[in-house]
Length: 350
Image (cartoon, rainbow, N blue to C red):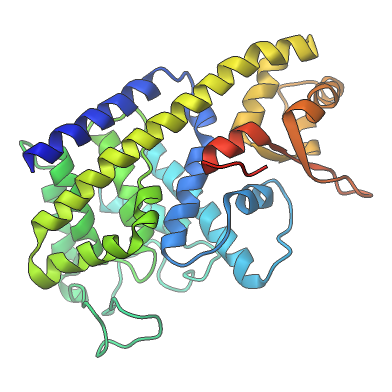
């Protein structure tokens, strides 16, 4: 593993260095947090896009089926859950209690809401094809009567010192998935663990490392590597895959973070010149924090007087924003910050 550990650690350190130069990561990296939620949920079978999620959160109604609305709600819950967990790390260590709190948020009002949100399972579950039975399962996690002891052992291992942290994280992730402590949401929580672990170990100043883009692009290999640990004892294959994923995704995350920071710096002066307002940077921060928004949300955000906010939006909307939905009657217009969305998506979305 040594030839793989070095490049992965170096790439992660480069990403941390980039993040340390960003004044407000929560604001500027908000679209990347949303994209992580979309891709982590996509691995579990959802189909909503980043644009649909942000438009929904801005107050737009999905026009598709109830299934699509459920997808969007699950993704929104993921964002809330990881934000809650990140905040709680300042108060308690990374542990089962924190994960239970995150699980309760993850399952709120969605398809898993009846599957004991916020609690470890009390019945046997199974990993296999949708609609399958225990008899046809590809893998049976630990029995419920042994689960508490299993999770305690897992926690103790997670906090052991003296190991390479990335190898330790690889094992923490695969063992969490093998224990499968909840009736639903284990895959998303297991991927959420990755940035939380890095933050808890001081390898990141803020849990902003998002691995799901790589895992979604290599979904079949990801699932096979997880299964091969239990089926064949192939720890080396799994750890090698995980370290490669960390290196490649750290490089991509660094590229996106730098692109977002460059965009922010470029647009600060532009906003001042276009608006001639002392509130220009407040407006720009809003666009970064909420790159798809209702016009009324911008006017009423509280940091800019209402009439000033309306004037700022009139001056910049045609040059900076895309109108996703025009105003109609009492329904306000919905806008998207095109440049930022394209960086988050990694392609020309608008």
